[in-house]
Length: 402
Image 1: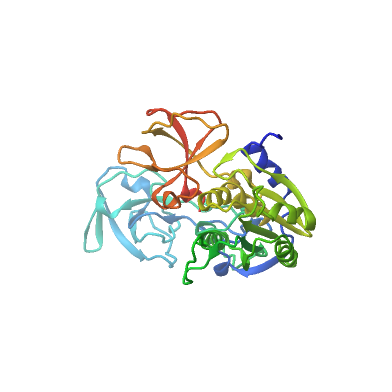
Image 2: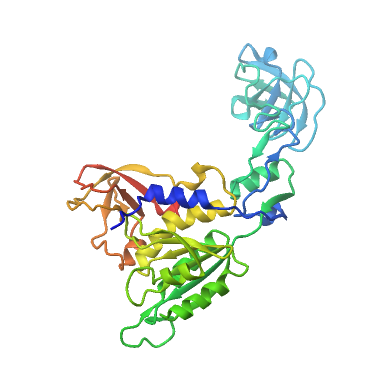
């Protein structure tokens, strides 16, 4: 029997095969949320553009306030968005957060350290030059790269682009993904449930995960357990799509037709991974589309999507930084015992407790979808590793994956 491929090796193999989509479109920065930058973005300006104040207070010459109790005439008032006059010696300017520092001033004293009487302010503090002043270019310097190519744009990146005046951004086009679900036992919510039938929860889980990743989805629905039907839908799904994802039918039973169908219509590059849940994961190509066959068990399908499909899609979308493909993991205390080690890399559903440790869901079966709702994430447990209470384990929050 051929040994199962380790998780890391399988993922590296998939990522090495990925071909990012080439087409680029220009979008309004307001419409670019979730898209991937096709070209690095360079700032054409300093941010801040000029020295400005971090505080409401008084702009002064530090030398005028060296006594710690200076009395100065308030010569002007400078709100944000207005340009003040040069500051004369022996005077102060009333200034508000974000306003430009007037020529001649070299410090700001916060208003809580000042006492105003008419047009005279007593400064009860000896400021140092530069105090409470944001310097021009302190955040961004003109000519610097603010966002490299391959960046997946979130709210933070969009705000940064806007802060240097970028109204449009070049992004890779959306990834086109076809999905279908195999099994004569599958029914849709709202339909009567015949004996032996189950509702197709995977359709809802996978579609939502793809939507979270900003994909264009072509949903071919439920496909009967037939080799001919599976081959026919594979051919149709490969037309105009970058990736085909299926759920179910990837094992070795008589009614599992995905493997022979892919081998007949394209090629299968990888099958069966040393992962639990989710061993029967398939990876290949059909015509010009990549193919990923997920297991039919709901938790197996969910976990293998997070571990393998998500980073593969990000790479197809043009995300290049390996760190952006790998979810952040945390070393946390196990507050449970897991005495039976498995030969595969296990991913256990767990959640944080009030003591900062991890609790394990009582039933780790691949069909128990409630564990994914109850849990906060996955414990990445290496092959052959038993866990005792108090051990430190590697924990990946769902917030890093979904």
